[in-house]
Length: 272
Image 1 (cartoon, one colour):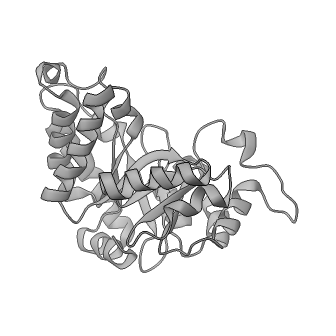
Image 2 (cartoon, helix red, strand yellow):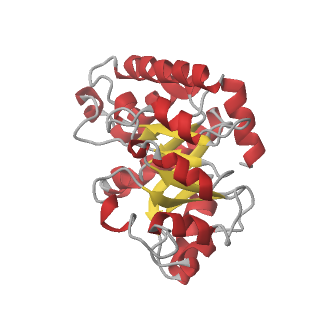
């Protein structure tokens, strides 16, 4: 999906919500465990319930891989289901890849050619040759980890690298030489608050994938105040647990729909 298509979807729906698909076999409704593939059926119902309110889905591969072959089948079939039924949705494989060049090339092939997703999250620690194999696919995106919301982000991401540049700023600046804002996004955690001002100084036009709203305590209003780009939004705000586990009973899909609808309504107001 190209940038202009994503921007058009955001404007049309009045939403920049990304629903994280984190189907934990220990948390999904108990009645689904009787099904042949519980993860797949859970994801399909969540997608049907939330598609009117979001512009993107982010399956986290760990939740699928933890269930072995059946989990991988669920992932493939979930992506296929979204593609066939909601083709305007932007699909992100949250895989956090990043390895030497020939291995990254195979990870890229798996994500873009086999799964057929629009984007994959990538870790920048090993540098350009671990990231560039993901670039150059028509209409596909790299979403590079920049400033995350986990407590351990302070271990490395805020290290001073000279010239008043912290490591996360250096990552964004350097990676901007590998690809432009039409194929490179950045992960920035919602809990970082006013740090979005610093992000925008080094990435004024880049889309940001923003986890951490809701269950992790991030403020949607702060994210928009300091991170939104006038005209095309420039944000994909992810919510996972707050939507998909809004209920763990038979009404889980209805509860997910209600939660997604509430967030989308806030986003519509903030977009104005």
